[in-house]
Amino acid sequence: MMPEKFDDLIANKDFSKILWAAFSVSHISRKEILYRWGKDGEDKLEYLLELGIVIEESGLIKGVAEKAGGDIKSAYKQLGIGYGLYNIANAEKEENWISLQTNSVNLTFVREFREDLRALFAKFDEKSNSSKYAGNKRVLFGMIFDRYLEDIHEEDLNQ
Image 1 (cartoon, rainbow, N blue to C red):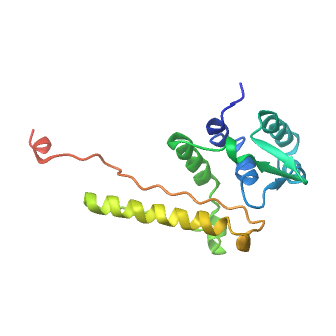
Image 2 (cartoon, rainbow, N blue to C red; image 1 turned 30 degrees about the horizontal axis):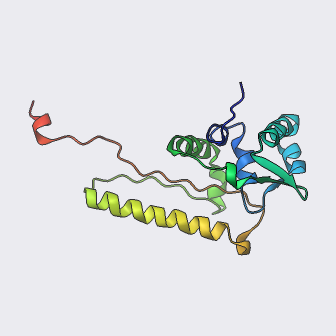
Image 3 (cartoon, rainbow, N blue to C red; image 1 turned 120 degrees about the vertical axis):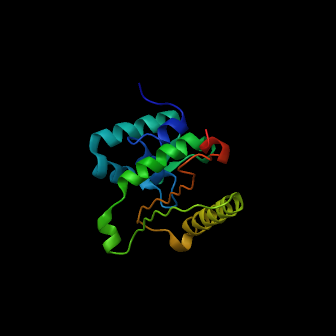
């Protein structure tokens, strides 16, 4: 059975790339969808059109803003899809970036750094939606910042 809700579709690897492109500044054409994904991509496009999540206008497939959204689970699944798409060869051309760091910090750091990351995400959103930067380089930007171990208390260690 095909997913019907936007959250389920955007977090589905079979639909996510079409939707990501449709909701981007440059959108995507039916011709590009056919080129990239063939009949299977066209079938997925027809399904999305049928649901009203995207529209076809002036030769472009565009996301319908009123149908968009997403919850934490959807973002988590999309991030997994994104990490699966990471291309190491692009790092050699300095066209992407990935990093992982760990450390032990206090709660003040956690809260302050979370806000720093939210600000960076807002900057990406603002700049990538600017007509100055519109183009055909389809990119994703995902972030994860979380604890990798749960808190323990001194008395837990002394049991």
